[in-house]
Length: 552
View 1: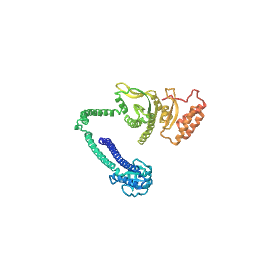
View 2: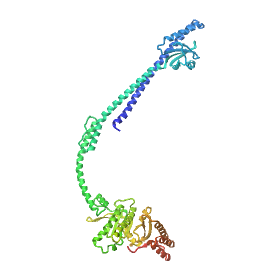
View 3: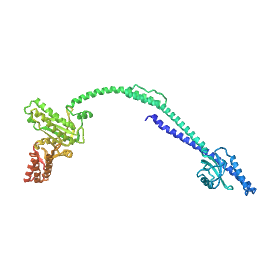
View 4: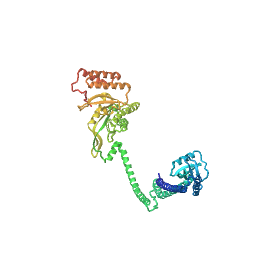
């Protein structure tokens, strides 16, 4: 909404309201005054007529002539003559009616009453009111003042036609309306002219601003038209644009330098991303050279080729590189896709972590999904190898989650952004356990708590890896399960519950059912044999179901 329209919407209602109140007040004052004068005029005539009638009757009384009909008739005629003498306009009428409403005297001669007028006049006569009243005589509405004259039994009324009585009031109403309408139209025109005069300079300021925005030409200025607040606005705008023009020249110079610097930085980042993940580079640049050590919970993954010696036997170095490069590319792509950071390559192994330097709420789930993605990507990779007449790769993926120290570690000459801590060692050990349980993916209990509601999981065992006394439950997972696998995994988990409860006979039945559904299942076979052994030779009381591993 424009300022001009706002001014009109504010001022015009105020102007109209003021003029309307003034006109209405004038109308009511004038009409009240005219009505009061007309009322007083009728009252004066009625009072004069009453005085004349009383004086004429007094003459009869004083001369003892009230008993002579001819003298009473003459007196009535004298009163009627006097009434005719005080009539000043053809619309005036003085009449007298009896209690029955019949006309006894009229300055207009014989009157023909219509409809129920006689009854209405009878009610007026019987009421004997001395206030201003309205009545209808001969079909004409009238306003009058009356009095009761007992000697004659008359109710005498001095009246004026209602239209004539309020004619001046109606003229005042019409005149007031015309004056009010003319004043409003003139006021609105003046307000529009004033609004245009007031907003014109503002509009030109806006046009100049729009011109600067569309053309980026900061040399444009506004003409200072008035020496008032609007003129000060224009002058201030010109000063501001001048300052912006000067600043813009400096900014362009700085922008050129910054663009050159960014180009150099981008080239450096693109080059170093071959060796260091992008997130780490950005974290190092943000913290100026070094990312300090930070303790946090992250997921650590180890993946290695389990048949590395077999598939690389007899290969020349260049052939080995050609075989490993697409494999590592496929594995690393899945890690990046899930928001992980490849930490290092150790011969045929890849170490990665999830949750640093960028933390996600679902880092635990991301790490397990990355492990599943790796096994699926490997299947595609092996299809191409087999088609080329080469041996397929078999991999293992171990994932653990826990508190580690993450940051840049090393010296001024050589630094690595990596993680250290006991959970890293456990992840490496879990990767080695895949050969024992013939599973491509194994993860720890700490990860199972975070992903059990998102993915189907199978409890494989409770183990103490080499070098540790405490046991940890280990699990595997799939993205989806076939109906047979879903049934077998459910039975296996029930068997594990009985196994840890030392109900080895029940556990054996569950594991046997798993083998009938999945013949040759390694985990069920191991647990069945172990349950049978403990059935024959029960473990000691302190046994908690932990299997101690003696190899990596």
